[in-house]
Image 1 (cartoon, rainbow, N blue to C red):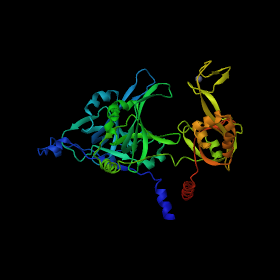
Image 2: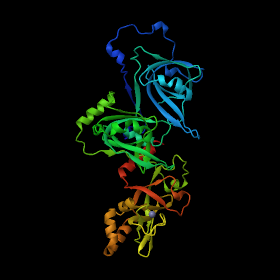
Image 3: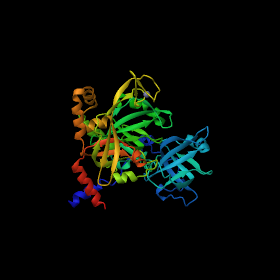
Image 4: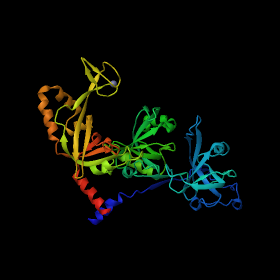
Length: 476
Ligand SMILES: [Zn+2]
């Protein structure tokens, strides 16, 4: 029993598996036995990344450029400041980020190309940023006025060309909204959506594309690629031959929407198809043997934050957590008794319409007559051992709770002879227990009389509940 729990607990340790890309130096393939350009004696002194710290004024390093990307920093002015980020790797496969700004981009930036190796002399070491880190490590690099960058022409096969810090798909639920460290993932592409245009919070429009990838346990996750990197990859991804290929995505963030996890690209995200690293080869072999794969399981947040009703009411979420969903295990202690569980919504804006003689008036659009569709709504009171909460359910969740579909519901409601059936369905949910998922900043937190919308309902899986409780007890 004890052993079993230990194994269970190990699942909660976030482990990284590393993918190191061997150097693919073309010069080395020519079996070039000529003397290297630099004589050994002339090699300048340099330090490997593990020796660097901010307590010395400057350092000399020798490193290969793995990845380069540009980023815009809003200067609250009319022109945006461009920042160039360079990820470097050294002979011990350690990585460090170098940031170039303004004039540095003009003077040094054009010489730095992915794959090339440099001595960088008089480089400065500073603390790494606390958020959106690309690679582990406490420090990063920047240039000084007297810094010099010298390209190394000779072979340096001991310096790999890149290194990835992969997370397994089953580790992703623990990494939701962890903006401190971006992660790398690898999977097989099983679906690519078309490019769609959506409205951002600041009301500007942006483009995105969704890619679904699976791991070698047929777990799937959606990855959203945002506009800033889309132009580099749009054509390649939209090609039908991409389906079934292995894909490495670097520097992505795990996000959650209504309990479903997805990956979100960043400025620094790079995509690599058909990689030569071992992880990619293993995945390809696995996929070739499992091409007939019937179904894949999306990664959901099974380790969802749980709360009692009292805890949920006392939550004071900040801006980073206000959209996080918590699960509450509770019993339906009161259901609305009337059968008015639907209203006619405006087809344009989704808001409730008002009957105005023969027409449906929409106050939202201020249209005297609008087309409508039925929306379902139910008000419930939930109870657990700590408190009660008023909640409201819509459409899919109403249908799920009444064990029916929206279509069946609309035909039942349209037929007056079926009124008893609807009433019976509504009565039957009383005293049933479920896990209800609500946002942390549910309206109920501020105003106890206002009902909080339910995002999702799940049946209680008693075996999983017992395991969860055991792990809570053993972690005390
Ligand atoms: Zn409307």
